[in-house]
Amino acid sequence: CICAVSNLPISIAQRQKDQVSEVLKSKGLKADFEIINAPSRGQGTGTFIFTEFDKSIAGFSSLGVKGKRAEQVADEACESCLKFFESQMAIDEHLADQLIPLMALSKGVSRFTTSKISLHLLTNIHIAERFLPVKFHISAEKDQPGEVSVEGIGYEFN
Image (tube, rainbow, N blue to C red; front, side, top):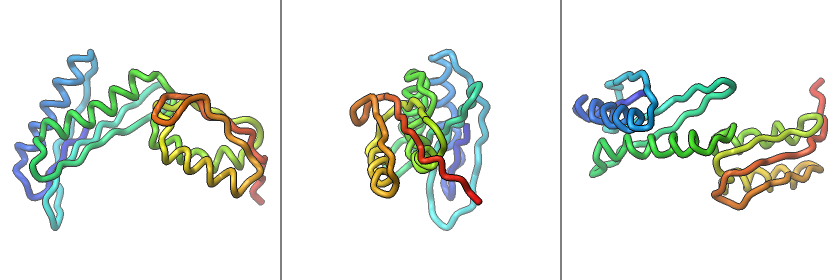
């Protein structure tokens, strides 16, 4: 987990770290932490939680804004992380939409499960179906966990 500040007291990043540690510990999870005082022209703070699983990785973040407490920044990153972890799906919502072009171009059937069928994912599917002769299959409604599959066109790069 990285907790960072720019042109703000380092104690803000320390509070974010303490909150992430407490939340994850309450769920039986532990993390390694790095606190960064990053150079920047402006002020800011953020928390990034990086997770490693047997066959995948995922990251979850939250940025501070004026008036948002450090603990809330940490809680937002933790909430996203835990929601993904508890979904037991293979891919987080932010990676899911990036896989669509590759799946459409691949040979054979590709599929994955994702923690959330996001609007961004649905948009990328819509665009891929307009550009290529493919039809994606989605097992759930928007904002729900689900599976995405497609028979790709088998494009071969020369």
